[in-house]
Image 1 (cartoon, rainbow, N blue to C red):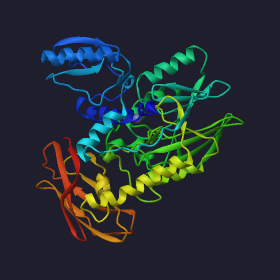
Image 2: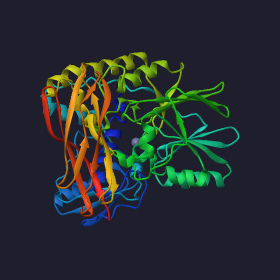
Image 3: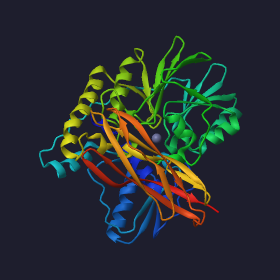
Image 4: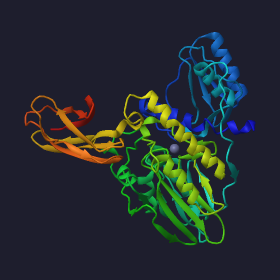
Length: 468
Ligand SMILES: [Zn+2]
């Protein structure tokens, strides 16, 4: 199946956009076109035009700018050769979600051959079965609108700016009367940035469960990739497994630690018709989507993707999955679910060999020890509570000790040792006192962590923003 390559790289590419967004201060999705332009500007609307413009730039070796029209660009070779220094390639419209790149299998194979050798083989999983979305589910960028028969709306995620504008258009056209609810799959900015605008305009109730709730309400307390700068109150806080009815639908919410640890899924069952589970960015038709180490993907049986796979097996018969970055709905066979689980299991000994920790999860989880909140704003003379949150990934109970390091004149008290059960989380609390003569600005508190067999210097940090 040659076409199965189509979706394989779509999310890694989005991941790349996420990574770029930190330095360009522009999240994926709709926004003003980025201003950077170098040399001659070429507008490109197809793969053939792109290749021709790239070849010209490569030959000329002088900086140029390629502006891509919204659309999908299918690369037919194994690599994309860029030999032109200073080449700028970007979306013409500024709608970065609307420009997508896909590589064929040869691309991944070429990379594998460089690492493993000329005989490298990749046994990918066959693509999941797909089907078009039901009529009652309307795609709007990477949101999905679930419509009731009375034209009331239930939204899934709210990232890009154009979503609210599109909803307004639907309302003006008489297809939508209201947005009563919004469910959030995960905290990443391309799923949350526009929540406050949506709530302000439509008064939608915001639904979430588990650790995601605090991430939506207080993103600044965390140091994680793709955080939104727009906190929103979660007005419908749920527990894992909560069920409720809305119009002709039955909803079930799940804590769903897939693409990130702080992720939910929502099972939607329409009376007497279809069922679909919104799995956010956790799965695509090509399989699991755990490309970013900072997203905290635990390799523990019963947690992380293992838990998501267990959950897939509990869904009603015939239930399809929806990832809003992917057009069709899809569903895995029992054999595909088993293959994903087996692949995860095989990673454990491989990573154990590669990583210097007694459990490979310490190497997979940058946030196994973090100061919380990550960012605090205080005045001179005030104090600030800090917790060192620790996830004990080991299979045995461990004692953790911490020594805080703060700038001269600061005092840190507390921070006694903490004993944490295997595969669970604990915290060690402390208080930072800011001297009354402290200068305004950013001040860093770091901690040294020791646990049996390891002394970890300046392992994690918190930022104190002192204002006058
Ligand atoms: Zn996303």
